[in-house]
Length: 83
Image 1 (cartoon, rainbow, N blue to C red):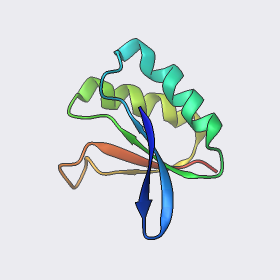
Image 2: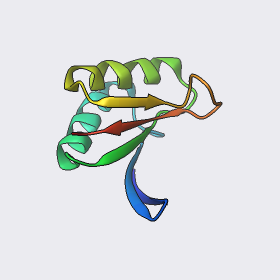
Image 3: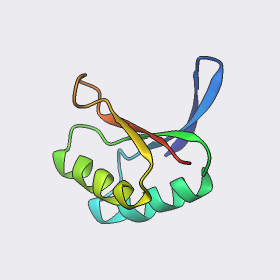
C-alpha cells in the first residue's frame, strides 16, 4: 500500500509493506524508489526482523541516506532520501 503523509508541511510518500510476502518486497521497493527519485520516502516494515533485513539489503546498493527508526524507537520503518 502506498500513500502520502504530511510531515512539517511537506508530503512524504509511504510504502507500507504490511500484507506483502517476503519475496514480493524487493520488487515493491525498487518500483517505489524509482517512482520517487529525488524525494524523501518512508518504508514501513513492521515487527518482522526478516522483513527489515530484506528492506535494508534491497536499499543498500542505492547508497541513499537512510534513517532507521528501529534502532532508537519502537517504530518499525526507515526513511530514505532517494537522491
